[in-house]
Image (cartoon, rainbow, N blue to C red; front, side):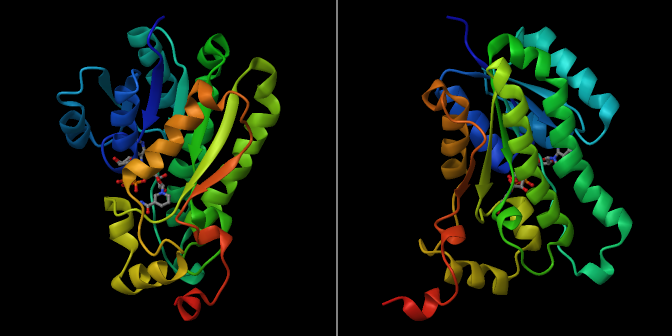
Length: 250
Ligand SMILES: NC(=O)c1ccc[n+]([C@@H]2O[C@H](COP(=O)([O-])OP(=O)(O)OC[C@H]3O[C@@H](n4cnc5c(N)ncnc54)[C@H](O)[C@@H]3O)[C@@H](O)[C@H]2O)c1
C-alpha cells in the first residue's frame, strides 16, 4: 500500500513538529509547512520521510501554490492538520483592528483557506481534516478577545466542514489543546498565568507536544474512521471542571 501523506501547517516547531515526528513513526510521509524558513529547514533536517514547504497560510495566493506543489511532490494528501497559529493576548480596549486581523488571518482564514485548497486531493483519498483550536475557544477568559474568538470560530468551522464534507468520505475533527510549553505559549504566559493554569487543571500540569500529537494522529488515522464533527480537548481536564479546584485538592 502507498504510504499516506499528511500536510501539517506550523510544522517547524512546537505541536506541529511533534505531530510530524509522530506521523513519521507511524509510517506516514509529511509535507511540513511553515513561514519561518530558518526554523523549518532546521526542523526538516534528517527527517527522511518529510519535506519542507516554505509558505504563509494567511496569504491566499500562497495557499493554492502550496497545495499544488505538495500534490506534485507527494502525489496525494490523506490528512491535513491545520495547526499553524499565532497568539496575541491583550485587553479589548487596546486590541486594535490590525492586531485583531493579524490573529484572524492565520488562525481562522488560514485554516479555512488550506482546508478548501486541499478538498479535491482529500476527496480522492477520502481523507481527514484536523483543525487545532484551543481551550481558549471553549471557554472565555480575559485578554483573549482575538485569540479566543478565532479559536471558537475554528471549532464551528470544523462542524461546518464535517456536515458538508461527510458525503465525500472526508472527516473533520478539532483538537483543543490545554497549555503546552511551546514558544507560542511562553510568549504570552506570565508566571501568574502558569500558576493559575496549574490550579485550574485536574492533572495539575502543562501538557507536552507529544500528548497533543497523539490525539491529532489518532483522528487522522483509520482507527477514527467513524469519528467526525468532534471537538476533543486534550487539556488535563481543564474544560470539564468548574471553580474551586485548588481548595478541593486534598
Ligand atoms: N502551546 C499552547 O499552549 C497551545 C494551547 C492551545 C492551542 N495551541 C495551538 O496549537 C497550535 C500550535 O501552537 P504551538 O504552541 O506549537 O506554537 P509555536 O509558536 O511553537 O508553533 C507555531 C508554528 O506556526 C508557524 N506559523 C504561524 N503562523 C503561520 C502562518 N501564517 N503560515 C505558516 N506558518 C505559520 C510558526 O512559524 C511556528 O513555527 C496553534 O494553533 C496554537 O494556537 C497551543
